[in-house]
Image (cartoon, rainbow, N blue to C red):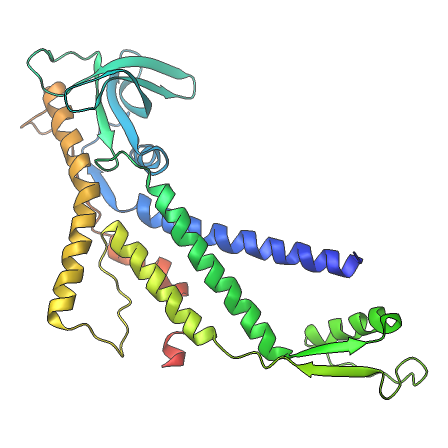
Length: 307
């Protein structure tokens, strides 16, 4: 493989990785910004709590004699209770590890600070990251296909030359592909009839792929329980369709919000904070709208141009 081909392969692989990672990070930022935890003790970290739920599907809230109230990663250990939930959690982080009993409010659950609270990302305790990786892959695939399609409009032909002229044409074509006009005047190396061009007739589909990207992004937003800001101007939803869409979106949002609220309720009961000015709570982030507008700007670019 020539050095040129090696370089082209490396550039393509770099763009593939960067495009996929860009969508992953963009979606992660939205997912981690969805909820606001109010009144958390200063020793607890909201960012790390949401990261644990995002990557692991579960986390723990507990009291530690050395640190005070903290939140950690956790894995199930011990038996299951009557509701098929773990009775014990291995609560861990860097340089920290303790096994705690899980508080569920049963009669035999005394209000003991050696217990902990299980926080679930959803009732299945499934990480958000699993689904986001699929959405990001589809967006990456569409984005890179758009890049290839646009390049095909620039050079919609296949060049056929004698094998002895391959390196010469690669060097000349690299200037053309780099938006640099080239002039060649050596009649001994490049003679009439030595070059043939085949029109690949590559169709322009970038506009359709941009619409496809919006559909995938909107599906991601619906999965997260967020009303889409990118309804196509040409295809306004009728009232019944809009209401149905909002209902599904709300159910998805509740699947994330309710388990978090349940954990807050148990935490407040276990540690005697209920109905006090120190009780914790969680709600939808009021700044989410502005965060979405910022993250979605690149997704919607070009869509208005195609209308």
